[in-house]
Image 1 (cartoon, helix red, strand yellow):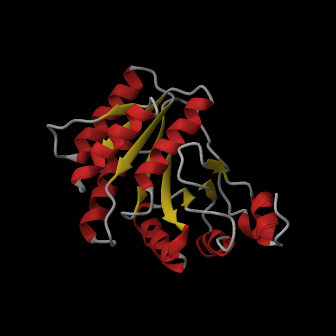
Image 2 (cartoon, rainbow, N blue to C red):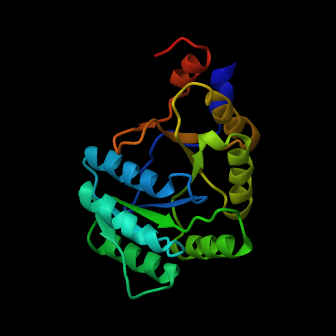
Length: 219
């Protein structure tokens, strides 16, 4: 049963921690749509009347923080950044302090992405994970990269134990295969899918809907 395969053990959609803020670590390779997905998720939660703070902890790409600043401003999302600080762990901790003190519901932490998985990147992610003790670790996967996305997700999972996957660039056609692979091979639940370029183009992952698309029944 496709539906069962797609329903990997774990949470569905967005689940709030019993005590706010719910802390979510966003990770993924460069080019996967991680930064945009972070803002999409922030916007999705904001529409549900949640107070969301995004932390700019991707200090690898010069343009990453700038991109977040522009996206946050355009979508009226609160952003924590520190242009004077070059240690992402310090920024993450300061953002958490702000989120707690100012009673935010959710803190989304945008972390560094690289073109390939390397030791340094994983060490940094492990450190951030240790310092924040996040409720969730979302891996952002580019569905166009197919089996590579599954392999990368597996490696991230080995290092930092991801609790959910956000699948980007998902147009519902041939991409059902990768959704199945992630659920079946990794046993990690898909939590959201990015269905387009625009900020509202993010939906909670509902297996029934995807099964319909895979079987060609449309919605």
